[in-house]
Every structure is written in C-alpha cells, then in structure tokens.
Length: 259
Image (cartoon, rainbow, N blue to C red; front, side, top):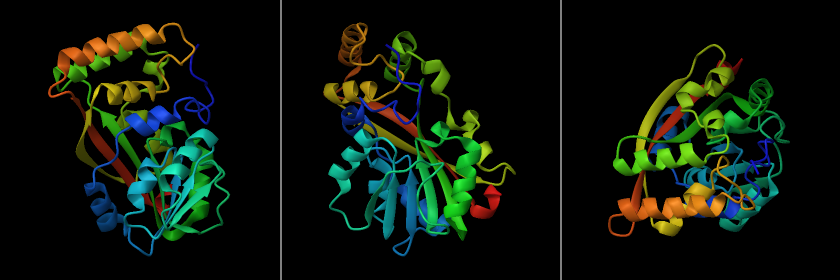
C-alpha cells in the first residue's frame, strides 16, 4: 500500500519513527539566522509544517516565541510531548496556506523539511500576511548526501529498490522549485552548512521508516526491506553505528521579496 497522497497525512503513521530517526539541524544555523535575519530573544517565529517539533526546538533556544503550525494531529502530539513544557512554545492547528495567525504577527516564518509540501501561491500570500513588514521567510532542508561514502551509496540503492514514490518526492532543495515559487522575483539568499547524524541499528531503522516514500506498516514488502536494511547496517557499521551525512541548505528573503 502506497503512502497517502495528501501531504498533511503522509506522516500520520510515522510520527514515532520521525521522532526517533530524523536528524536535527546544526547549531551554526542559529548563528546564521541571528546574523542575517535578526533572530533573537524578542523574535516571534511561525514554524510552518512543524511536525514533531525538531526545528521548533532549535528555534526556541534563541526566539522568544515559536508558533508550531502543524495540521497533522499525530505529528503535533509528538511535538507537544517534546516541547509542551518549554516557555515560548505555542501549538497551533493550521496549515502553511491558512495558519490562523493574526496579520503582521511574526518576525520570521520558517519551513524546515516542509516547503515542498505546501501550495506555493497560497503559502506565499499567507506568509506576506502574517510577517511584519521587515520580517523574513526562511526555508531549510537537511539534504542527505547520497554518494560521498560507501554506506550512503548503499543506502541510496536501498531506497531506489524499496521506495514507493521515492523518485517523485525526493529532489534536492535547489532543484525542487519550491524556493523559486516562494520568491518569484528570485530575490533570496542561500547558505549550506554540513551536519552528520550517527545512528545505531534501531536509529537507522527509524530513519528509514520515517520516510513517507517507503512501504507502510501494512505493506507485505516492509519486513523484507527491514532485513535488507539490517544487512546493510551490519556491513557498514563502525563501533555499532553508521554516519548519515547532510548538507543543511538554507534559503531566506525578506517579506518584500515575496511580493
């Protein structure tokens, strides 16, 4: 059975694996956002498609308030469990295209690992509405390297074998077109930061199963895929773990650049 096509439901059955297996973002990203976009203790941020709160958690280290805007209840519940006790965290049921936030309410709107799921024109209009006049829109992706190590090449081969709609949904951020649609005049800046995630066998399983483009729990191919993954881990692990390397790609522009 293939994953749901509705982007707000693709991860409903994968929230726990998402929590266990998805990487965070490099701390240097906070410094970049502080320097280039003014992120600080007085900042209010809308984190759109916030999922299980991975990026919201990082933002809360610097921002005064973070609206975690997420339409999927299973993902949002994981975020509440993770972040509910932190000052400044605000759980919001909404979509990127209809956040429910007031006009000119935020200094920054972010989308981490999410912008490509949004309806471009409606999202652009909503960001222009909720951002303050001097606010910033920011898109971030952890782009997994696919061929820089033997392990990463083998993992990519596994996804090519077992992915359901992998080719359709997995594209590097710079090739996706989502950023260009958000900033139609082409006025945005970009940076790339390296990051690495160390995963034991269970962590690697969770990393794989958190992906929306692999067989779901009720798919008969899934147990065979897991056996394939475990064999891959046994071949490539060092000290009981493997390294998943990423390029954290960051794109940002001012509210005026959305118009």
